Length: 223
Image (tube, rainbow, N blue to C red; front, side, top):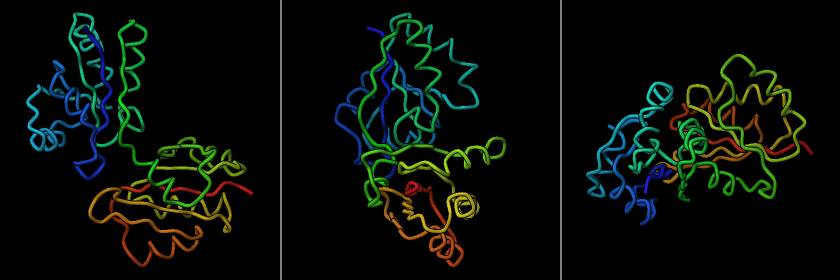
């Protein structure tokens, strides 16, 4: 039966994948991968030989109808991203939405995603939180920060190493210098690290030591 399987993949350690995910990656007719070169490492590790095609933010509009047609024709397709769960700050939303529109079954497996371990490791309240992902790079960024400045829930962001200091500096400006912050990087990898303190503390630390890796920033809500 045709179905789209949304399959989380490891965010670091290759052992962080479910047995069901490995089985389905072997069973589906096609796997759509954000970067086939990156996903090939996972496939080789688990001896998966299923055909892969690229599906990423630069081509998803262009190839969407082609894969919907294949699904409607009776094929099953697995959707993966480079790391973690597709559609969480990664491609996938458009395909999932179109499948639902066309009454094609969608099955999202539980699995790895970076912000959950970072949130739990932060020691900040987890009962209510707001996941923001990546902030807008330019247009709408200041408006978004202003709207978040009075948010009482714990805030969770993704950030790259070359923008981390700029982002923390803006947090200092819009959130103030009293907020507690936790920053996790390279989650489940060899150099995994979590640093905690005030926004000012962490700006100072990153100015002393060049930031490397992909970051999850967890910010205390306004009291």
